[in-house]
Length: 137
Image 1 (cartoon, rainbow, N blue to C red):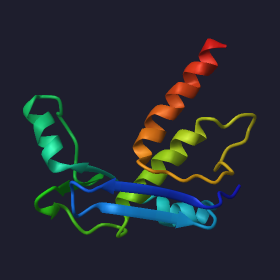
Image 2 (image 1 turned 90 degrees about the horizontal axis):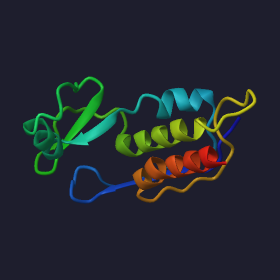
Image 3 (image 1 turned 135 degrees about the vertical axis):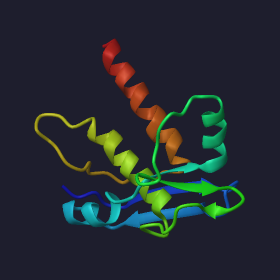
């Protein structure tokens, strides 16, 4: 399957190193996913993580699997794999969430045009509302 016009916007203006990012692809096949989307790591804001760590809410984590950005110092563990790696990771999150809808042997990428703005809101809340509506039926 091929996804057309896959796009995501990551906008974290309080963190200048991330800023506003855009990712778009005319198509997405296994090869493109493997080389351009799959390697993108999750990211976090150092100051937010430190607050949680000081409260005892974080016990683990590693800079091997995540990129860390400070609001005042920029990226703390460069280099990035892509200049827009945070945005690509949001695309990765969205593909993962949408893959949960696969049915009847239809595995792979959804066929859709998706434009994400403040994409975390969409992929964090949309699936839960859809799943809740399926459970109620």
